[in-house]
Length: 214
Image (cartoon, rainbow, N blue to C red; front, side, top):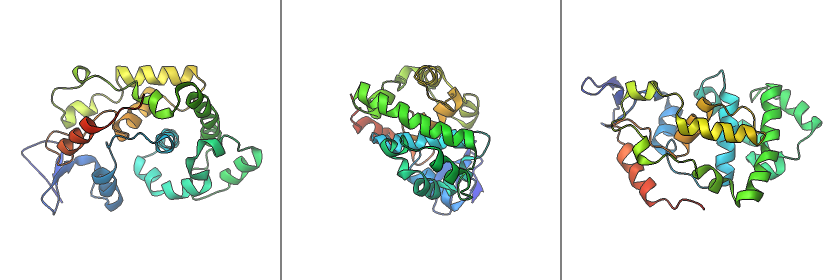
């Protein structure tokens, strides 16, 4: 893959498509960029999984977490928050001994805690999706033109900060504004594919057709 010169932040692949630079040419990262990142998600389990994995990513790279995702799913009840909420000390000991995941006890305890908080959110709002999607930024709060420079200048936003504060008030952990903005990017609450990326327009169409949960 060679970087294009006409638009900063895009890389042209062997297939002729221009993509956001951050995939770095890694095969699994490319697949994630092309088939997942930025698609609007209304499934509670996927939303919860992403919040948890973003928490595990703190201090690490997303590529590290992505390559361990299937191991996380196997070890943590597929991120079914109903089941994960019932994990106890025996489960924590098992997880901290599992070399296939991130064996950080605080992060593991956080995921279990957040599962319990997720049940409360589901009971209050009917679904996690209904809760999270109310924090989708309006179009006039988004950059008029999204370039690499603009994207790198906003690791967090007003809306991710608001959502982060609300989650923390509700007892969630490892949900800082930057972590939550990465969650919003991945789950399609915003479309942060760069101008000129072949996925940007397709995802704009998907977002337009997406039925926001209420």
